Image (cartoon, rainbow over the protein chains, first blue to last red):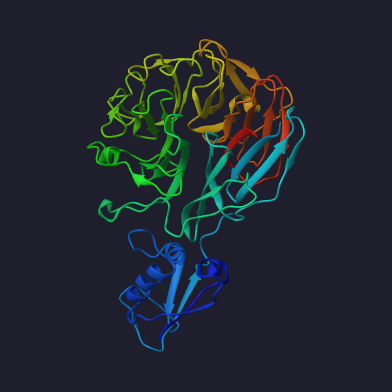
Length: 89
Length: 361
């Protein structure tokens, strides 16, 4: 079962969890769709309403920068990380 | 009576409070720290004031948070409160305005967004729907973007007629609806767009802000990207009221909450030199609907002054003795309890001030 690692800044949106077990596999798109169903507030922090990952959010699958078509296996680890860019000066 | 002053900044929301005199202020710590608060809505139609904050994380996107306890606690819905439907093919970049509807529609809240769109809530701001009549307007593809983005920054529901509504956007201009938002028409006759070959187009004007007169709902005031105007016919036509101002450039314009004809703005030198005129921190007031303006500066900083006041960063309260407030991009906030005759400093050294709202509670 893939696991999504939630960054500290978004854990409130996931009920305080740091790891989320995801039933869906296949692609990152399927994983994010499930996140949208089960944790909608977390999902909207990651993607906009058109399903596009936000500009200053990066998603990695097994340590590699990923897009919605990236394959996700049963044992994959998905990391969501705010980009080093973004923020405000 | 306590007066609450909500200060939206580039890095959080600050809530200041004062007693009836509005001379000494207590400023609370940053809420939503590190998150821009582009606008604040205050809905006073219910039993308790409701605060709505347009929070905008550069990492995690925009949202709207609501508080029914004057900012002690905030809540957000699970699903995005403001979002374009799938078929619109657009995504909310920022919420620029949150405005309660007229008294006759107690649950209605309007939101203006970037990209330029109007949203309507009927549940007090928990969820919003796109106003299709404006989004589908044939002019929309020709609306431009100001330096701050393409956004609806002004929403003026008619106080007595829920079917009448006015919005404004930079490089789009003023639009009105007379049927509750189903259809819209541009209302820019007399507003100059000096940056076009034809400076008098039907639409495309760079309106920075519109305010409605306290006594006559058909009397409107517009601060333009060069140009200050008055309409006495609900926006059918506009006439310049900039003759006695030191400059016709600026961002905010606000109207007295109860006295007809009294308005304030904050002139800047020019588009190409965005500093206060004569490099002095001065508000300008007119008490005759813009025919004559006078500077007001007692209590404001002396000496050369460079910061600007953004379009949403000036407001009045609806106190019996109206207060006037403004914040600057240097993080200062000033308040007047005597209609601008004298000013006190509410706060300094805050992040850039984007928005202020004041309400007696």
